[in-house]
Length: 451
Length: 89
Image (cartoon, rainbow over all chains, first blue to last red; front, side, top):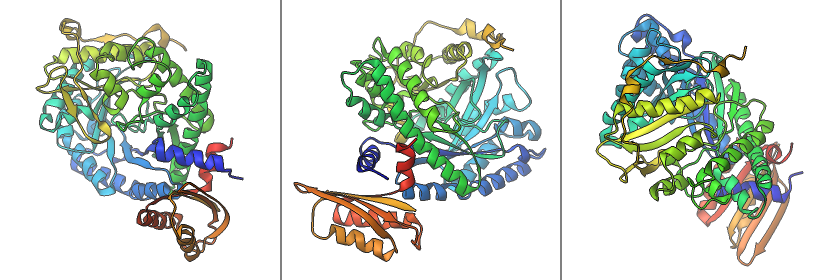
């Protein structure tokens, strides 16, 4: 029997607390589209994506209406394009344009997988693809790119880190007329998951099946609203409450994912248990931390509060879903989170604190606007720091920073939509050039020798 | 198969009639209704049986949303599996 309280609680979550399914992402393997002729390969890629995902948006919208739950994004992730480039050669941007064309045809919001996995070194196609990223992102709207430059098992490829500092900068410069949006579509990973449904870092890993549905849930607003009902509870009680709320949110994701996979006739992959904020007021991870008792996100205690949140979300979510994967945890993208934006503007939140927070959250330095005149070597050094945290702690870390061309600390960029807006954050001006120029590898840590 | 319709908004003449009329037209059977008016806020939860419905549930949602916009109330249609999965282990 359905009781009134449950009904009202659910309606309230959707209506007032921004509960939604952030994304249904269809992962499509393109390994069977390899061809020595790049034009033939592109045609195969286009045909496969438009066939497999033909009904993705339609089914997503149907489920949205029948279940009464907003599904914000329908997306596609594909096999890292560097793998196709390895056999075809040619201009990699052709693939980006093909992905764009396919994304437009099926009507998805983003398509991810303009990617290379170079954590141990460069295979054929990798360097060409990486060099083409800025152009690919400037000449397309929906294509997202990611590069994995390190892992706990392999260590960090510092030659790739050096390259990525320059590539991030170029991606931003080539789109300077569009708020530097290029860099916002590019993620540099350590320990990248193969089944992540969230953009910009989604790609369809080589170990994945042919076609799969992954779901990313959201709901920071719901967690925060639950915490307002427990203003004086101990942190044990807070953790419990977050677990229960995360359970409910994730069940929704599981239901939607299972239904989508049934209707599309595609295998159900995973639910990604992430709390993904949006710039909408009330849909913020920072506000959850502040609800726990911090005056402003970024002050002392923020890392501890985030660790509690991240862990409780996982504990609640794991029980609610049959298969959990992706990034799973709390996201802290600065420009996409009203509370983070406010904290960054007033100076409470610094890049150093964000870095510390990434040691306990689910991803990394995400959507951070940095001064446009930042040297490429400094961006590489930021990537190296972040990758080191991921490598040593067996976790995914990522860097998505946006050098704001022509802007200095204090000025702002505005991407609009889910990507949000935010102030340029201050970085160290001391150089890291020599360290980055050394190149080579940071060997895998002792933690990798578990066999 | 069942679903839940909730209606919340400013009270006025004919809300129940209009919602029920759409249900009848779609071969949807209303099995339970709880309804209250507090001051001038109207709130109703309707449990409906959609087994004999001729069209997809999403069309009922579309029509209810249209009605809600017309008369200025918020109407939600949700499949019962949402509540089952969220509130039952």
